[in-house]
Image (cartoon, rainbow, N blue to C red):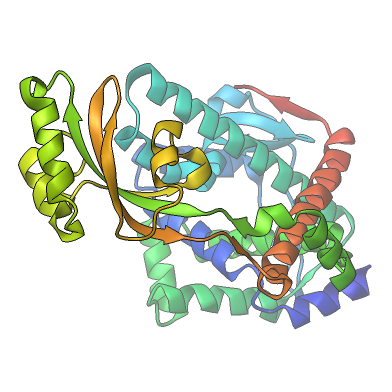
Length: 364
């Protein structure tokens, strides 16, 4: 297992780059003084240290928490190892900052709670994976960790380690702490990949069989794009509906007059765009309209359609015929979806096994 993992580390030197990029953004975007102070208080009790060797970096060791959770902002423990508020904010801080622009009051509080609980589950899962990484005695090559740190510097226009250290110091952190974060994240990502994803094999036959069985999923239905001229039965034309509808029927024999007629008479949607209501699946079009337009071609006009609420004139702006996606066109998306489902299943099984053997206590 160790040899296989070490080989995988060397072959996939750029794995996790975008995960680290996100983590780096979160780390530098949390400007809250209270949050930073909380992290410092929690860190004092974690007793994190690293053991550097010439060829490999040992995983940092963590002592079991000894203090009361409330004193250091601990929201859970995983086999005695604390999960702090800062750990959660590093996962969901950016998303949480957007919520006040979407919700307010009680709903905002509820959405924040849901987001943080989801983030807590993610943090717990990753801690379990990292604990297994350390228990198995795995190590990351030193150059692998350093290379990922270099990728982060490039993406944030930091030219050297001195500039990075200065930036970290301004944010209340250190190079050692940042290196530990990078180490932990890449170790977790690689072990998840090894345990959950490495043995997934989607054969061409399996993809083709899926395509044949679900061919309807790769069929685009017939669609119609309509323009609507609406005369409400209780609207401004209610006393002369029959007169105006007769006039429009004659006028619209010239199909190019539809836009002008909408501007002059319509009480319907999108008047400024000639009554265009966009694309609609033919199967979803209301039956009252379908009977009139099902045999029309692009550019044709029909009406008046006399209904209780209004008299309608319809113009078929365009038609898209039913289209079946070929296997050649669909096979990549099918394989990608199968891979996603298999990965989710593999990850779920792996995490459930780790959780079944762990002692987890939550304080939320």
